[in-house]
Image 1 (cartoon, rainbow, N blue to C red):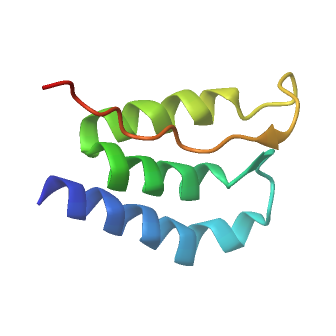
Image 2: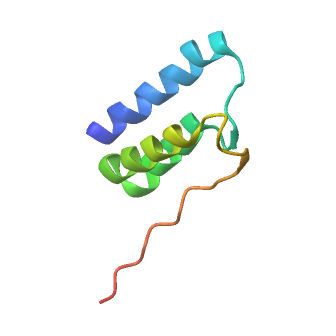
Length: 77
């Protein structure tokens, strides 16, 4: 439920708020798309952490680049 709420909030941002500012993200995929995928793959807590780390790197001091969401680690049995 928390994951679904976080994903809806990101979609709302992408649809209503992001277009007001234009494309300014220095990464591919965009920070909001990255965070959406990270939460979908890793869950709300780790995904939000990964998204926050990514957003903090989105500044003029960091060079633009392709930065995909890391795959979910498989647990050893």
